[in-house]
Length: 638
Image 1 (cartoon, rainbow, N blue to C red):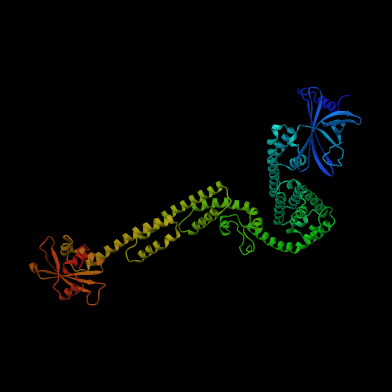
Image 2 (spheres, rainbow, N blue to C red; image 1 turned 45 degrees about the vertical axis):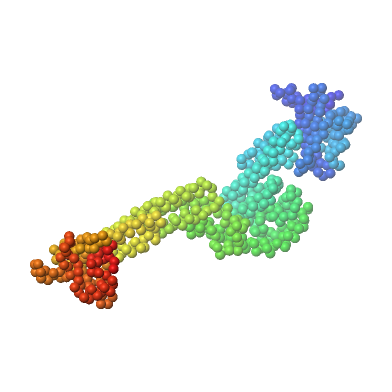
């Protein structure tokens, strides 16, 4: 009689007779599971037929959630009790009964543990092909619930690594580990994205939202497979409940699953992770305790007290935490209201500036840290989309305001500057967005500075152009130079300072020229005398200065020169009086005479007045240096 496995193999090959490779294929693969002493094992069978026709079977088995793999190298024989698989020592290990594409089996001796129940293995692809199909599912970019269900089913009892060809084991084991973690991360992100994007405007929207959340939380084992599964799933649930509450819905009424389903979910969660954590109860309920009502809590308590395989600690913890839960609910309500207030503000640059990019009222949040989970929960991610809108609107507004800026609207430049400062301080922003902010603000500031410079310079020039010295117009122009720069950018202010400095110099020159004209007009000197020259001592000799220049220079030092002429023709003499504006009592008037010079000049200044001589002597000065001091030469010294 043929061997049972050989018969099964032959039958299997006949089924594949249409394949070009059917006659060449000598290997078959089966997979299944069995239970020993309540522990479940996965098993993979690799069956091959040698050249002699003998069928060899490698039976791999691995306890669920264990990394240890064991295997047996067996051959089939026909014994008194039917077909059996024997080890190399001739010991029967597994009894066999063929059933179509399935082999029913029972451990006979040397089982992994005692009390092993009969089991079955079914025809399958090779472990390598099954892994490849699983990897393809795991690489789905945005996994759906159906894909997640398939991956969850296939990873509950994945192919056994040692059933792979030896050269593939290490790479496949590493790839499996990496892809599984990444898959469940993407699946959670996909679910979170889906729930977060669902509308909540109408009652129908809210109903569909609640149903989607219920589905997502119905099999939390998909999330619990990850190291941070509990935390990740709790966060997803919390965000969904917060959104529902923010939309005006009643989370306790719409999202609570009831005590029976809560019990079933908690049992499943504890099967995956038996350690106590109150967050597991919240996850089973489908709603954070921040939104539990008294009626919900009472209903849940009665369910927990009658929930098999669930520790009474959950009911006890709910009772002890209830006062704390109620206090937390008050805080959550106030934070939720503040979040709603911020979201209701208009999407404008002014909102960004006034709220410093949607920062909550400091008095309201003074009891919690800006880095706390509660703060981030209501004023972090939930406001990110609105902040992105504010950013885009503000960038556009910055460009628009800078384009229509005018110097008589300084508040516009201030608003642009404040907005840029706030945007510059924003953290956790992608590099391209930060570059966009920098470029927009630099361009806007350059535009404003250029307009400020152009318009401010025009204002200054216009103010000084029509202003005469010592007039109200001159005073207004000077005041403009003192006040205008404070409203400008540093670059524009620097430009205005330079223009004002030049304009003030011109004004001072005008003032000096006017004083000169007035001093000459009131000096009493004839036109002939004004054009004549006086000798001026220099360090290395002497120079000449026109009398009119002497008069003008005297005004700059606060002195007024006046002249008188007496006599006729050759006997004509000229006197020069010098009146000092700031002089000691009795020393404010000096009397000089102009005598013909023996040098190039027409006149030499001297004095015959004893009082003048006394005043000069008192100051240690000689009459010869009087003109030098008026003309400010280096010879002016006692």
